[in-house]
Amino acid sequence: DTGVSQDPRHKITKRGQNVTFRCDPISEHNRLYWYRQTLGQGPEFLTYFQNEAQLEKSRLLSDRFSAERPKGSFSTLEIQRTEQGDSAMYLCASSPPGQGNNEQFFGPGTRLTVL
Amino acid sequence: GIQVEQSPPDLILQEGANSTLRCNFSDSVNNLQWFHQNPWGQLINLFYIPSGTKQNGRLSATTVATERYSLLYISSSQTTDSGVYFCAAHPNYGGSQGNLIFGKGTKLSVKP
Image (cartoon, rainbow over all chains, first blue to last red; front, side):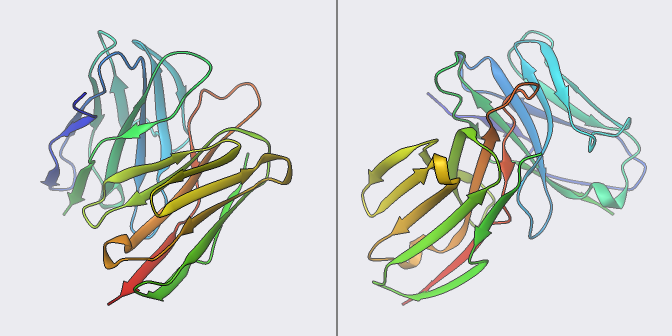
């Protein structure tokens, strides 16, 4: 079990550029979550996938943000026309199927800096 | 939605001391987790504890679901325990798909 992985670990971009992040969940985990964490705050939920279906989106997920999980395995989070306010740590988590245990396991995060 | 409040916000300890971190939540929950965030930002799972008591080495946690709080105990603290501790909960009502609501964390500093 290799844990949740995220790529890249760091991204520096200029305002107005598009960026894409990737998350690979723990194998056999069918549930995948994206969160965003700004300095001094706890993570905030962005969106949730069960298999390939995107089942929930937070109000934080503006129309510049899009997430996909095309084959129910890895997921991508794209931010279009980045703004300085998008600078944050983007965290991905996964959890196993079933009702009895939905413990979430987090990846190392992608730290985005928008100049 | 559910509110998750942690206390204290900051805690400074001498190495070897014990501490208790508290997490209050405003609704019944079906998931409650404690995490330690290391200096690189990685969230390390400490406990999955929607109810009851668990222990793992020098750490233990208790959740009293009926009274809507959870406690994290750290005994014989070490400098490596420093960091931010988060409590996160998922409410036990329909319409939500399991996303965790995090508190603002307790920043722990253990001095040698």
